[in-house]
Amino acid sequence: RLIARFAASAALLSANWGIYIWAVNAGHIVEASLGYFINPLINVLFGFAFLHERMRPLQWCAVALAALGVAWLTWQNGAPPWISLALALTFGGYGLLRKTATLGALEGLALETVLLFPVAIVYLTIIGVAGASHFTHAPLGLQLLLAAAGPITAVPLLLFAAAARRIPLSMLGLIQYVTPTLQLLTGVLIYGEPFGSVRAIGYGAIWVALALYSSEGLRGTMAAARQARRGA
Image (cartoon, rainbow, N blue to C red; front, top):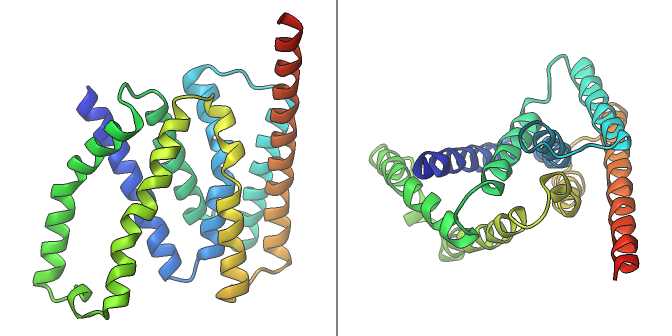
């Protein structure tokens, strides 16, 4: 059961990374950022559905408002924002599995890496034989950047896994807003991806939902702190 659980978390993590890398290279950075904006609200739903965490009325309003934002983008674009939803669901599922895992952050990541290693070797062998791998022919600077992507990704993931075991899943998303904000700014300001009124309305609804959720979480934290001081 332990191996199966971590095989599932490794598969979700690989899917999340794969979708994100493809989205960035295909010019969908802004849509990818939406997935990580939605992710905290997916955590709320997963916490309610699987861990029986209680949701307060304002949190339900936040989830409903975010759903309206996704529905608006779906209606205007003629299709759901699949990239965003796939990123949110895969990382939300990963957070749920790591939240309930019996191994610690470092041990769990090590096991996930061991399980993914044979798959990675097979994939690299296939693209190498097919002549689709250009790593060995890339400039040294690019090779070093690609090699550095490993620890740059692994360290935040370790911190995330450690946090997931220590705080309620419904609160895990409160600290995850910086990343999608930077992604959005990168896509719009650096790579010039469009961000018109249609996207602004849909994203705006989700941002308002996140503001409601954050204010409710902050209010609950402050109330708990006051109660703890009175008890002391």
